[in-house]
Image (cartoon, rainbow over all chains, first blue to last red; front, side, top):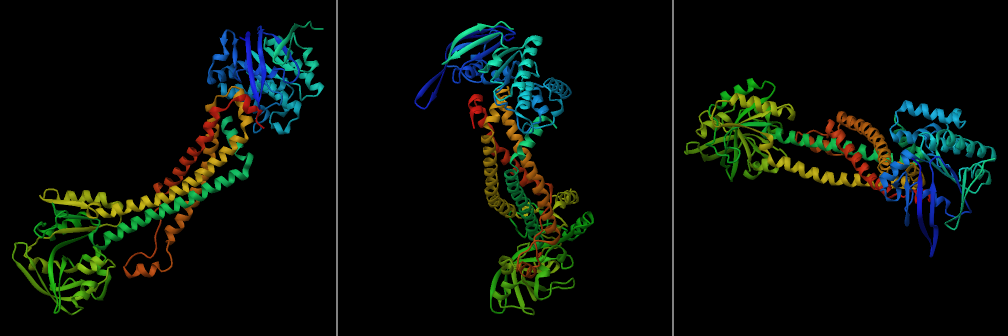
Length: 230
Length: 409
């Protein structure tokens, strides 16, 4: 799982009278276990590309397949199942469920997956310990700092061990220490659990962790480079 | 408690004032429905009891065909013996034999057609309320021979009063000419103009003698303590008349076909009013849940992006509504039951009701009927309509597009 092929992806949005080309014939191959950063200025199409791969939005044209399965042809329910069981999302603005505690937010997806309560609890506590929030399991999102919320969001995204994690500007609201911890966690998961990471960012510090850096501008891929780690 | 349930519960209290306002509307309507329905059914019970106690009794033994075509000749043989047998079989009930014929009643000045009933003076006061409604003179007594009790309108029409003599002319059971003179001993006022205009009662023995009935009668009225006893009493009466050919047992439903229709008509108009109330509550729920869903568009977008199918989101909204409606149901039911209980003990009346009722020997207050049905009917319908009202906000989530929803402010 998590060998991704994007072929000639096109997506346009209408903004008033103007038509914005969010993706303009984007093609990309992502191998299993890759750690890729999408970089580029705002409006370059990074988030749109993540949304398309995650089946959150519909393409105008083009094909996306994950492990040979055409994502762009799946109906709504099947897309939801794909996201539930195989993809973890980390959003820029955390997007935790405000009425649930940190632990419950982490457990939520597992509950829908049908994981037994005891196992849910064990896994969620283990992952919260891994992201350094074991003592804050009972706190609601409003009682956590931005960095803590983002770590809960990461814990939620990876707790059920998806093969692919799509992270949209995960460090945008974090201080440098929290951003460093988060990226180290991503790298650890990538190296030890072969989780594929596709991260959109314009943070140079994040880009340094990537094995491959894809630069985008005006909905197009302008460069695709393999990075040699220090 | 599952995570979904606790999530639904917590979501409810994110805007506690709004939730409480909606719950209050539910409680108010449930209290009103519980009490009004209980009072309505209590009034029907009272209406039925009063109608049956007035004259017919809860059930009757009649000759076959008498109910549809009441003729003097369609009669019950050995009626007094059968009355005794029925009384033994139904010791808690009151049993009275009767005969009935049309006759021409003449006073010194006027003549009118009347419905003449032969009654057993000793037991009739236990079966019918007419003996208690005598306004002038007295009711018939065991030793009376040729006495009569008239309705007040009839007495006025005949210009007769206590002590007057009335000549009765009719046709006997064998077709012979039936005639007799009776003395007025009492005048009753039932409150029913039909009865007061056309009813008169004489001792059964005099009736049988005058109308050549022998020991025949036309009906045996049986009065019970409660409507609920009717089915068992019908069975007992049937087993008593078992082998006697040509006799049937008819219950109050058959005796008064119009009574149930009147109740059903009244129920329909009542439900129209209740329907308006329920729809208002349903709209309040629709408003609350629609606002709640629209406010949480972004949150639902996130949940959807995590891979939760729309039906689970819809189920969450319905669960929230169900919890809210359950609170409304529980509180409304408890308060409604307490209000109904209070009035079932103390009675519910309005100014002047007691005076009017006392004149006609009727209860001076209405008493709510507290049964599982009257208590739960209204709240369950409200609960159902609340869920129905939440369907629209819930179904909107099926059209949710995660990206657009997450962009929502």
